[in-house]
Length: 318
Image 1 (cartoon, rainbow, N blue to C red):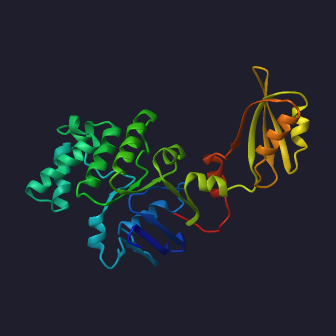
Image 2 (image 1 turned 135 degrees about the horizontal axis):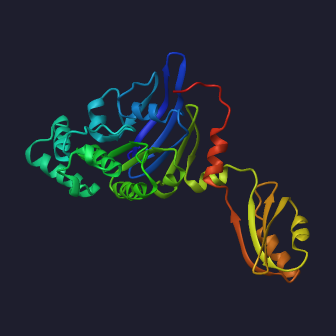
Image 3 (image 1 turned 45 degrees about the vertical axis):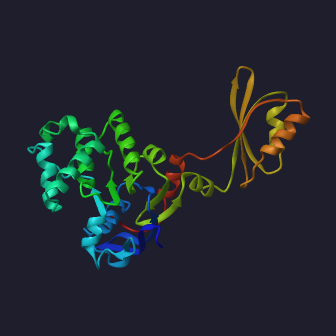
């Protein structure tokens, strides 16, 4: 699988009697930005720490570009940049001192060191605080410095655990834009429980709950697969609309969403995954309705997330 950056094959991790991650399997292709979505305590951080060689799986394998990360952890650490949830910065250091310290740890030398630091500083946009103590930087700039240290050694894979945690809404926007920019050249795995973050930055999602992967795919895929019914929104002008819509074969319910500018608005829910738009259009033509809007309504990512993670499996997690 030459196009695969990360292969996770049935990994399990226990801490005493607690099962943190239970038989998790997934692949991430090169160049993908993948959101790793789950509530607190679902196993996201434990999985990421196994990917980055901080933890060893009790069972299963993790391949980085086809190489087992336990058999060659040096290669894995070289290929992966990691921004943990608790950003590892030192408040008393200047930004320049901190990045040079990280360069020492990464054994970057001379011109290679300078070029790597200049490249990271430019990419994440921290030039204006380069000579400022980290303790005097805003949370947003601290996260940018954390990202700079994660990409300093030019890794091909970037793993980030809750990169916008603790930031206010105004600080989150530029960090999301930065993640998208970084993702143009790298494979990115982004852990978060912020749904908007996933929708705005990620190509594909992995949803974990109680240590198990409960869904994976694009947002559209997960929305399509999550419900056994389908919904359609209708906006129109005409007579006997609600009663006529209820008579469509397979209709479960018709919700009256009120009237605006003399236009009646309804949400039609079907009993099964059945697209009733053609039938609504034929009905409108036959009853001489003026049809202003007719489109499919997909369930929100919020409702899907709640449904997937509110379950069931009797495991205990950390």
